[in-house]
Amino acid sequence: MAGRIRGFPAHFPVRDDGKRSWRYRVISMLSRAALRALFGRGLRFRSMERFPLDGPLLVVTNHLSNIDPFLFGGFGPGTMFCMAKRELYRHRVLAWALAGCNCFPVDRGAADRWALRTSLDILAKRGRLLIFLEGTRAQAPGMKSAEAGVGFLARRSAARVLPVAVWGTEGALARGRRLPRRVPVTVTVGEAFTPDVPGGGRPDDQAIADSIGRRIAQLLPPEYRGVYA
Image (cartoon, rainbow, N blue to C red; front, side, top):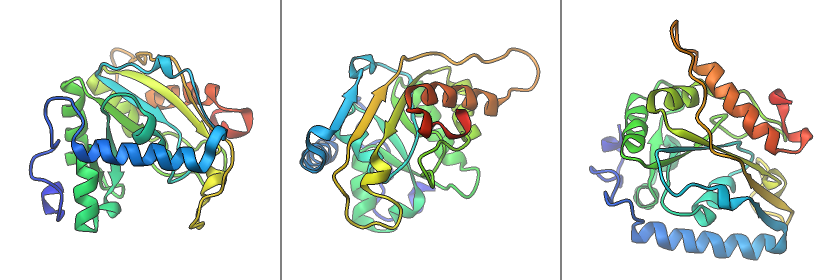
């Protein structure tokens, strides 16, 4: 699929040594500077020492705003990978920049086998993959049901899962708003764990995804827990 996107490289990732490309380093630095300038002391990171630097690791978080990916790109330690909706790759230069930041396209309207294979390959090579649990932004400050694909990746890869909770970004850049506002934003990192995968019978990927969702909900204020309250 990615081969049909102008600007996206034929070989992904652009570096195979586990290090950041120069595009990744530059955009990460710019993201940090912009977010610090915007939020100031209102930007809080809790328990970042829990963030494993080794893989395979699924970094799974809730999703409230378009600001969320920049929090991880700017402040996440080490090198990570991330799925991003295919619509973002319409412009050749943006596709080129995203690929340099280890972001690869996913078609959210169908079972995207290429994206799943790419994800499993990243994890098989002991990479760290950022996943937004609900698949898209929540309409309001409350978690939606997890996408079963998260459970599938956890089951098939046997990777550890790092639950991360984000809140406040929905007030900084709500849907339909063009310019962000300065509000308190918090990112809390939980304990990495290996989800229980029942043996025998038909695998229940949704149940695995929901178990991850409950871990994230425990890190959020009650009003943000939504279906996992």
